[in-house]
Image 1 (cartoon, rainbow, N blue to C red):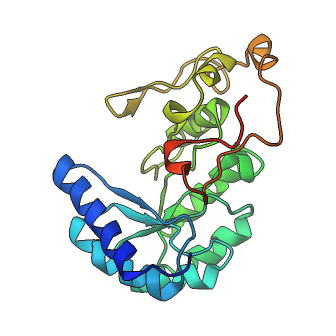
Image 2 (image 1 turned 180 degrees about the vertical axis):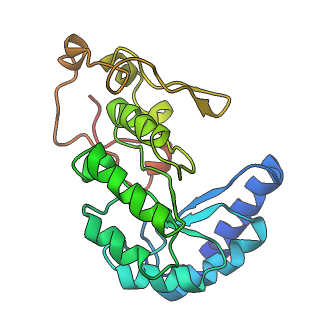
Image 3 (image 1 turned 90 degrees about the vertical axis):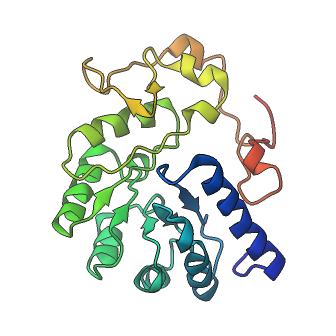
Amino acid sequence: WRTLSRYDFDLSVDIIRAVRDAVGPSVDLLIEGHCRFNVSTAIEFSEAIHQFRPAWFEEPVPHTNIPAMIEVARRSPVPIATGESLSSKQQFAELLKHEVVNILQPEPLNLGGLFTARIIAGMADAHFGVIAPHSAQGPICSAACVQLNASIPNFFIHEIFDEFNELWEKEIVTNPVVVVNGYIDVSERPGLGTDLNIDEIKKHPYRQENYLPLFKPGWERRERQSAG
């Protein structure tokens, strides 16, 4: 990580070019950096992919290095999105005060819930920023983010991974979030719009060894370390 060989750099650009050619000019491309690059590589790569008009370049440098993220955002021709791993209002305030990061991805499960997530959305709104909540931690998280989106004026896009999860995950809630033609209807049911199916949850006990290794070969095909 941190740098790319010239071969890998050019291959990555070619892949993005192929996707843009396949989907046409009107579909948003969201480029994921997964905190893998250093500042110079991230800036060079953002300049290379700018021609494909991506909607954002997500976390190109480690999220723990806020000054590095700010430097990339200041110099990148592609908007930088970040915030999924931040856990406090203060961290988001540090990003916002420099007025260069305006796509924030708060994760309610990392922030203690919807209350803090809504505060952060308000902070972003005051800086003309938008919110794309990091909704990637299961069906309850997805339902919570739908409610967050519906309650703020600066919602941008809803990230959702439920379709890539194990099929049984849809069974652990009574009314899972459903995407139809790229849109989600906000539930009119009380609370988050769904309830836990405890009987189904008991069929899938937590195991520490079950995880998706994002930095090992096979992660992009959702190959897990262990089944269960």
